Image (tube, rainbow, N blue to C red; front, side, top):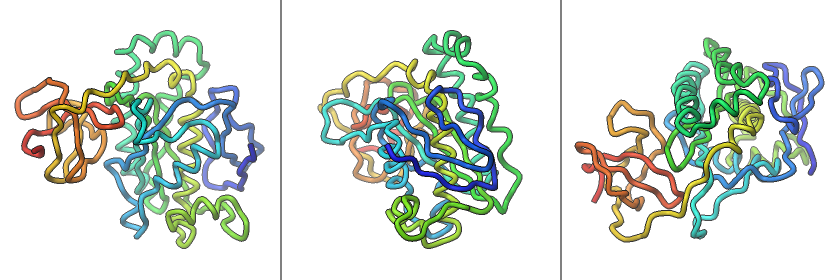
Amino acid sequence: MKRLTAKLTSIAIITALASHAPVQAKDDVELVTCEESLGTIAIVDGDTQGWAEFGLGSPRPIINSLAVDSGCFTPHSPASSEPADFLMNVIAGSSEEVDQSIEIAKTAAVEGLVRSGAATSVMSRVPGAGAVMGMFNMFGGKKKRVAAGIKLLSPSTGLAVVTGSGTVKKSTLSFRGASPWGAIGNQAGYSDSRQGKQLVEAFVLAFNQVVAQEAAIRATPRPSASAPASDVATVNVATSMLAMPMDSAETVRGLEPGTTLNPTGKREGLFVEVEDNFGTKGWVSVEALN
């Protein structure tokens, strides 16, 4: 598969943990490639949607292109009867905003591995795994920089499996002519602005970090088939699916009016556990449902 290459002056990619992660020369960045897909993904906008502040649309087409071009993930088909293996939650904004969101997810990533029983085996066989879980502290504090993050979530638990971040002060990717970066950026109008170009590069960095943690991704149990379509609940106001039955819990994904959800039968106070059509589970206030 053809590699996408570009100069990078703002940040070096974290040391790769997987053998297939890109080998890079000094000041170079490549989109990671995989010999086989790590699973199917459903891409959703996260809680920090900084691209809107730049007058840009959702980066989902960009992330979809990175997944396909790299061969590392397969986009989930909504028409499929099987749930997505993972929910890919994408965020963007200032370094501080993304850093805060990633820090919260980092704790959830460790918790998720512990709950699944995979933490000990994964950490023991992956050199530098402990450093990866703490690597996100290096981001933040640079308001002039544009940052992006990716949280790969387990649809079964709503918890983060792995996370990745990228921060760019000045993009050095080429968006001219037949450049593959231009083709990717044009899908969401990102090639026409400085911040858009920065975000494309930041998402590449974040994506590479996610794939570099292949061992943790492969160790994550895949979701079972979605719940039956009976007893469907419909979202009546814009709200969020939460990781826990409390208002202060981490957001798993945003929910727009009209979204259909399948209640699992669990209830805590004013919150009910639901499952979306991608197989993602979380908690929603009954006041937001029909």
